[in-house]
Amino acid sequence: MNDLSQTVATHGARAVERCDLLGRAPYSDMENGLYRGWLTPAHRQALDVLTFWMRQAGMSVRMDAMGNLIGRYEGTRQDMAPLMIASHIDSVRNGGFYDGPLGVMLGVECVAALHDCGRRMAFPIEVVAFGDEEGSRFPAAMLTSRAMAGTLDHADLDMTDARGVTLAEAMRAFGLDPARWAEAKLAQPPLAYLEAHIEQGPVLEARRHALGTVTGIAAQLRYEVTVIGKAGHAGTCAMDLRRDALAGAAEMVLAVEEIARADKSDLVATVGKVAALPGAANVIPGEAVFTLDIRSGNEARRDAAAEAILIRIRALARVRGLGVGIEKIHNLPASPCAPALMDLMDAAITATGQRPFRLVSGAGHDAMVMEAICPTAMLFIRCKGGVSHHPDESVTVADVEAGFAAMMHFIEGLGSQHV
Image (cartoon, rainbow, N blue to C red):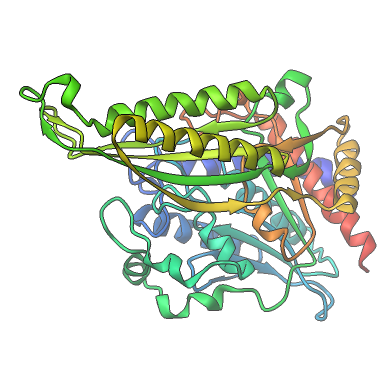
């Protein structure tokens, strides 16, 4: 765009400033840190201010049946499906400011730039703030993009958070009707889906690239493992007579690490959450619950590792005289980005003066859900040290400005194909 260089600094810096603002109360439900779970008071506050920003940028705004916020900027042709620019607005506990919200803010800024110069593409643009990508409140991830794509199951409404609140109850408390959840499904697939995101890894920084074109997202498996032993008094039960669920779980966790390391590939396996019950200092844990997350760019490798890990977990349980229950939480296949849109993103990055660079995403994103219904593209923006899901998460304004410029060139390139 002819006037792009004059607007890059303004829009890139403002995107960062708004992410920083959303990292503090009332947009966080955590003191001295960021936690914004789906359908929480902080989520509501974030949607309120985001609604204002979207309208300020020239968009009409609505909330769908699952709490996704959608800003729409009309195109010149009424018959065209929209370009969807989206990311998530929720966070992990004690998370960073840019994982998710940066992509939403950049989408708002792209529309604001078009609106400021009175420009419309042939196609409409919809900027979407997904309510749940992280799965930080309920034990499954990407619930709201799955609802939009039409891949969410009604049984998911029965899941509960750590306080025993069901998803349906949380929806009602937020002002949503759980009976209407299916209305979040899109009536028309988008023309294309674009998601900008911090890399959450060290590759771009190590290769000295500010931006990268994502080729696809690794396949993921997630389980919840429940280990059943026998609770007892910590002072009176001899060590050789114990059926300690937590000790068994600890051995299982080490086995997960051992199997994943031995694969010597892109395979990763993570136990991210562990709970011991009844959770008293003077009681031998009678039950332990932990999550298991397994990922690889190769589905066959991921599945083989998962099988080996689950076989080892069951074997360790037998040796220790423990019961074990394994529930598959989700199974997300590898999701490639559209080749034509990758080429378009490479050209957009080149137009900013950067060298194009392609990489796979080991982290999951809403793009992998939307890939089932439309062509997808992802732009990665460098983050300091590859640190993410942590308060030290950091980006530079210069890199974000480059990301904004690339997104504008991408929109322009897509527009030249649809006039």
